[in-house]
Length: 438
Ligand SMILES: [Zn+2]
Image (tube, rainbow, N blue to C red):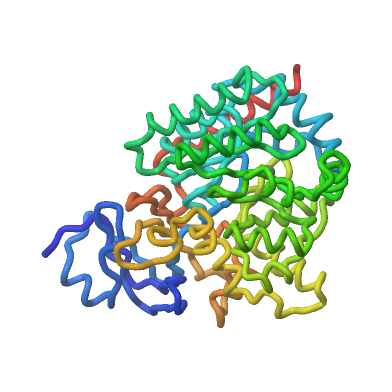
């Protein structure tokens, strides 16, 4: 018998492969971080001797969710300022709080909290943007979650760096230091066109190109952003980014709400993926993205929670539910995005956005073992006729029981195995007191 690390047996396996194969009562063999076989339980039980066996009876087994846009170090700002417009929220609450509190220790602790929370939400990879990305990378490594950690870049003074150039030098250094870390990559994340001047955007693009790194930016989030861009640069945001050469790189954009036909054509031509962040956009009243037009153009769409300061949680299942329903109502068309397509947005489409569709986003032999198990044997879930419909409209994160990342069990029966949950809770209360007394 061949020795393996984990055998997941008797599962209802959702592959999210090209044909969306579903296998009943099947098993998955995991070894050295990868899926080495998917087959009938009886067959695999005789073939392998597993160090750990997980019984997935009555459980959905599927690829872990990918949160394609978030700001984990903002976890301690959850609920700090709500019911405000984006500019008011950013300029009068979030940015001042960041100036006062952000430090390496703050970013590490808040990221550790956020990463643990992601696991509880069945998220096995996240794409982040913030200051002190090295601390978020360390926290993600401690939790055992996969991450692309973006060095957030802005022109205004902050405690992380003296100018954008220094930030770029730092992130390239981090990328080299983490070269052997299988879970972590770094990215360059200029915050937006209103917090970075043209020169800053140009040097971030040059650095990303030179160092083969992802560029991650917020764009066309509000109507005001577009109006200001038209006033200042006499063109719309995506056209402006294209004209300065920013989009001739590996780029993922968040939001993309206020876009016109020409901008959609640019995104399609440059093969740029867009992260939908419905709950954050709803709460900040930023608007409704023209999802119908995106789908017609064939632009790759994926899902992100945004940070908890604007969401205020990290549930990708909730994001799926909101996104599906809002756009049905907004377009007066209930079939505009069927449930299975929403599930793809949170898995394989996100993998594609980060050019990782060959290794992540679906369950297939040879792919990395980023797998979640969801317990369906619950009053509020049964009966289940269509698993995709259930994932989008019925199941909440509480049903996510086990999480495996890179072949390692990170959560078992909702218990986190890599971090102490009580310590994380104590730290959150400590920082709340600190924030309130300043
Ligand atoms: Zn954001």
